[in-house]
Image (cartoon, rainbow, N blue to C red; front, side, top):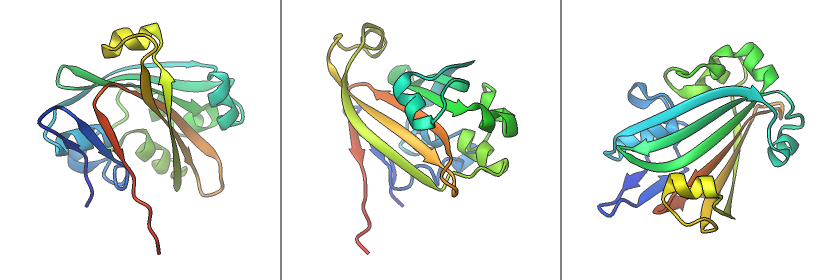
Length: 184
């Protein structure tokens, strides 16, 4: 099965072909933890959970971003900060899956808690773009302000088309993104 790797030079190859199906592997609390452990790394995350409005571009994806659970994470491999991630979860999801608003969301993370509550994500779209690092991002990730960074905007939807999660991953230096496209 496809898997992430961490090269000897520290380059992280993020393999999107299976990462969400393997999110609970070995008791992991989400895809990042599972894939980093599988690659031989030492994952950890600093998590803050608040409630508030999503930024305008995220709110447009959510349809109504005025009341969201916001999960802000700094994600590490050992002591190396490798990505920043803010996840916006609509209030209706938090109402039926309150664990998504907890610091520890348990084995499989928020995607599993949504599924447990009857809101399984059946489709994920990830848009990859480059953005200029803000001063705050630059300081956190050890890059220059204005340096172009990869961002992944992950949108998870249910079978009936409801958006239940939008996550914005901002990656530090040293990432390769791998995607597979079935041709049949």
